Amino acid sequence: MRAFVTQTYLSVDGDIENWQSWIPEHHGGVPAVRLGLHNQMGADAMLISEEAYPRFKGMWSRFDGQGVYANTINDLKKYVVSDTLEDPGWRNVEVVPRSIDRLTEIKHEPGRNVVQRGYDGLTRMLIEHGLLDELQVWLFPILHGGSQPEDLIFSPMPQTPLILRNTQVFDTGLVILQYRPSTAKYHPEDFDDRRELVNRYGRDGR
Image 1 (cartoon, rainbow, N blue to C red):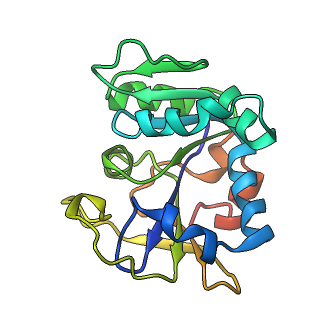
Image 2: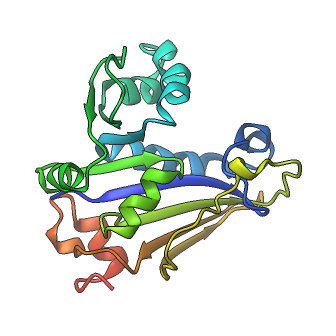
C-alpha cells in the first residue's frame, strides 16, 4: 500500500494560487529545497487533478531533460484524475476516473508514496473519504492581497480536525506544517514505504 501526500504553498491570508510572486524572497533555502526534493524523489507517482493538469504540464514538460528535479517529475508515473480528458499529451500519464474506488485501488498497489502538488477539489475528496495520509502546508510569511475568491484555500467541506505531526521553521519565516487528517483510514505500518511515516506518527498511526 502507498501513502497519499499533498504538499501545498499557502500565504497567511489563504492564497494557494499566486505563490510564484512570493517564493523567491521567502523560500527556506537549502533545507526547504531538500525537503521538496525528498517529497518528490521519495515518491514513485503523482496525483494531479483535471483542473491543475494544464498548468502543471505546461510548467514541467518543457524542462524534460534539463536537470534532476525536472527529469524526476517527467519520469514519474502521473495519475490525472479526470472524467473528460482524452489525450493528456505528456508521457507517463494515465487518466483515471474521478472515482473513490479507482483511487483506493491505486493506493493499495505496491510502491512508494504518491504525491499531489497543490490543494484543490481532489485534495478535499481524498480527505473526506479517508485516503489522504499527510497534508503538508508550506506557510509563507506574506499577506498576498488582491487574491480572488478562487485563489483561496477555503471551500465548503465537512469540518475535519488535523493532527499536527511535525513543524519546521526557517529563517525566512517559512513554516512547514505536516498534518495527518483525522479522517485518515490507514495506519503508517500498512504502507510499503513506511519507515519515515512510522517515525513521524508512531506505530499506532496517531
